[in-house]
Image 1 (tube, helix red, strand yellow):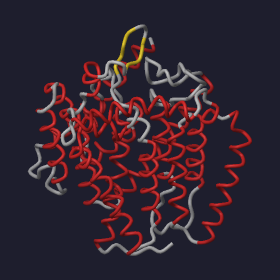
Image 2: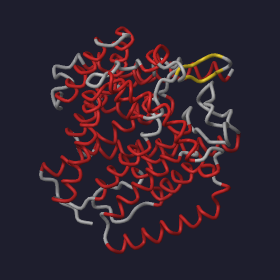
Image 3: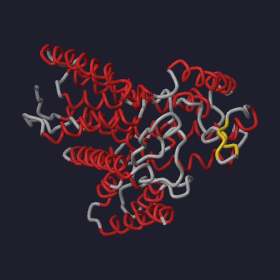
Image 4: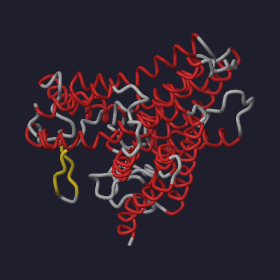
Length: 427
C-alpha cells in the first residue's frame, strides 16, 4: 500500500499543479510558489522523471500563449552557453542519445531560473514570498523528521532505503532518500531562515526556532561535510558582523564545541563506524579514477548523465551490490568531480559562473553600498552547500538543484534591487 501511495503522489501533484496554473491570474508566480510549497513531494515516481520536470514543461508550453516571450526579461547568455557546451559534449560522447536525454531533463531548471529572476525583477516584494516559501519548506522538513524519529525509518517518501541510513548507525534522511542530501538541504536553508524584510527591527521567534531546528536536524543526518559547511557559513556571518557579534560568535562556537566534544559519542555525525581517514581512503580511490576520466575528456567531458554508463565499461569496479545485483555509480562521490567528468572544464565553468557571479555581486553590494545582512545570509547558504557538495553529488535529487537555483537567483535579484534606487538600509 505504501509503495502504491508514494507512486501516486507525484502524479496527483502534477494534476494539482496543472489546475493551479490554469486557474491562476498570475500563472508565473503561482508556478514558482507551487514548486516551493510542494517541494517535499515533487520528487520522481520512477527515479527517471520528476514531477518538477513535468510541471515546468507544462508551464513553459502554457506561457507561450503570451505575447511576451519567457526569456525576454532576463539574460539568456549564460544559459545559451551552457546548453551549447552540453550539446557538444553529448555529440562527442560514447552515449549520445543518453546524453541528449540528459540535456532535456536539465532544461526545466533553466526555465525555472529564468521565470524566477524575471518575476522577482518585476515585483521586488515577491522575493520575500519566495523566502517565506523556503522557510515553510524547512519547517515541514523538520516536522517530517520528528515524525520519522517517532514512527521509525519506514515513515519516508521513498520505497527504497539508502544503504547510508543504517550502514553504520541510524542517519535520518527526512524527506530525502539520502541523509547526505538531507544534510546539505538543512545546512543551506538554516541561513535562509534568518532572512527578514529590510526595516524589521527584530527577528521573530519563528526564525530562531527554524534555525535551531535545522541545526539539530543536521546532527541527526550524520552529514560531516554539510556540518563543516554550516560552520563555514556561520564563520562568514561572524566575519562581517560588528565587534559585539564577533565576540558572541566566538563564545558561541566555543560553547557548541565543548558540548559536541562531551557528547560526541552520542551524536551520529561523530559516532559513525568509519573514521574520517577510512572515509577519505575509499573516496580517494574513486576520485583518482574520476580524475583520469576528466583529463581524458578535459574540455567537454564524457557527456551529461553518462557517468554510470561510462564506468560500467571503463571502470567496472565502481558499483554497489543491491539485492545481489551490480548497480554502477552515477557519480564519483564528489559533486565537483561529477561536473568535471560529465561536463568538462567548459561546462563546469558555466554552472559555477552563475553561482559565483551571484556571490561576487552580492559581496560588492554589501561591501560598497549597504550593510544588508540578508545578502550575507544568502551567500552563507550557498557557501555551506558548496563545501558539502565536494563529498556527494546532491543534484541527483532535483529538489537540491531547485533549492540552490532559488537561493542563487534570489541573491542576484536582491543585490540588483540596490542598483535600482532602493532605499539604503543600515543595520
